[in-house]
Image (cartoon, rainbow, N blue to C red; front, side):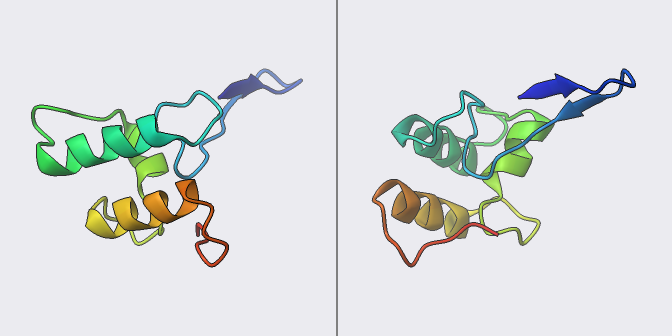
Length: 82
């Protein structure tokens, strides 16, 4: 999501897990993440999508992020984003 301040500066809000940037964390986000992890050259993500895909905030997009995102989608109350 992009917003413009009163000073004219553009800000991009990136929400962990919302890889498709539609405002909702869903199975589609998980599918995008899994496709990227399995074949990053075939299924590239934009820079902002990569930031959103790093669900645990460790600086890497990998299976740990997909496990966390799946737990979030399943409403696991112990799963939290960074």
